[in-house]
Amino acid sequence: MTVLAIVFWVCAGLLLYTHLGYGMLLALLARLRRGPSWPALELAGAPAVSVIVAAYAEERVIADRVANLRQLEYPAERLEVVVCCDGSPDGTATRARQAGADVVLELPRGGKIRAQDAGVGRARHELVAFSDANVLWEPDALRALVAPFALAEVGYVCGDVRFVNDRGSNQEGLYWRYEMALRALESRVRSVTGGNGAIYATRKEAYLVVDPIMGHDLSFPFNMVKRGWRAVYAPAARASEKMVPTIEGEFARKRRMMSHGWPIVLRGGMLSPRGYDPLYALMIFSHRLLRYASPFLHLIALASSVALLGHGWAYGIVVALQLAILAAALIAPALPSRPLLIARYYVLTTASLAAGLWDWLRHGTSAGWEPAEGTR
Image (cartoon, rainbow, N blue to C red; front, side):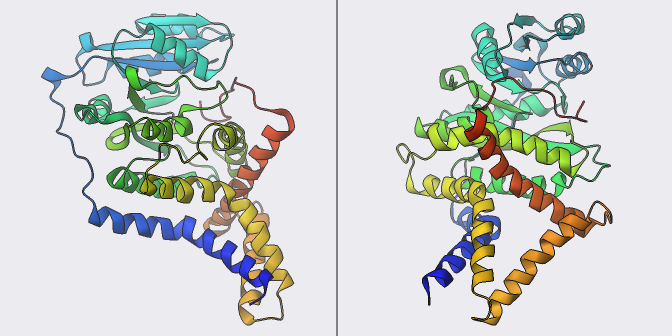
């Protein structure tokens, strides 16, 4: 076998593993390992929690966000609502106060992370939960979110977010259901490798102050593990969020997210094995590093399979398959059938990983953020 053939088969194998094989491996490990379990939380013994909402230009939705938190099935005297306005140019702060937030911080523009840091600094309680301004929690979400903290080793908990109002072309819901299934298995086997901004919580003593361009979703779970904590997923802690309506909008959103994600991977500590046990190191490699490397693996696999045409029927099939996916992605706007839209979603979201890296390397990443188009 030539070096070129080895390169092709390695890249093709890694792509198949990260997208399919990793989930199968987790399912097998989950059968062999008993994951952590915690009792349902009784409201009479519910711990005090501060819920922190970082907001920029959210006057259209912030009142609903505060009202939703006030309506949770949780003792009102043990729930503090903190809204951190990150230099909002509109009436976000006023509407948050009118809606009943306990604390409203009007901060200079410093980005979401610094607004959250300020919120933690003002929070009265030892458990701090976080949410985006355009999210709604189900009535028992907070109760389910804080229940795992009954285990002393748990430092971080993320909940389940569902995307709604997906009447456009975006196919994110299909991917996200698979991602949530992987997260549930990771939580059972060891710890999750990523979270989400819609619903998560941590202990104050475990909270990390990170670089303002590095979001909590990716930087918190692996850093918790490095520091001896467990990062778990609570599927009963459910939230809903309005989906970006189009695939092109999803590409832009993920591109922006990865301009914040690549600094975490390359200089934020994720690559360092210090603090990882072998199992969690394998999970980081499989779910994060290989996933983020997938656009480059695709390009190498395509180039090497084209170069190997005539050296075996398998290479011709692979080239034809890859070109068919690209063609389907190009045709999808004119002929929006579901299979073509899924192909377009996969191509653009995979490309967004490389585009986010390009953006960060070319001009850095701003700590500030704008609400994604169509999500408010």
